Length: 127
Image (tube, rainbow, N blue to C red):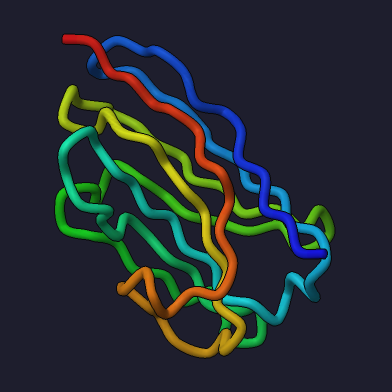
C-alpha cells in the first residue's frame, strides 16, 4: 500500500519560512520523481516544484512564482521529499500536496501525470 504523508504546514507571517516534508512508503522511493502542488480555495491545483529520481542527478524545476524562494530536495535514506519555503507571501496560502511519479526520469508539471498523492498540509501566510 502506497502512502504519502505530508507535514510541516502551519500559520506564518509574511516573510517567514516553513519546511514541508512528505514521507513515502510502499514504493521504491529513489526511483520516483516527486512533485509538490498546491491548491488555494476556489482555485485550480497548480504545480509548485518537482525533483527527478535520484539517478537523474537531482534535476529540479519550479513554477516561476516561487523561484528563488522555494527549494525542493530529497533524502532517499528517509524516503522523504522536502519543500523549503522562504520569504513567504500571502498568495502562497494553500493546501500543499506531494505526489509521486513512477517514470522518474523527467519533470512533470501536470498533476494527472503523477500516480500517487498525499492528503495535503495547509499553509497559511498572514499579511
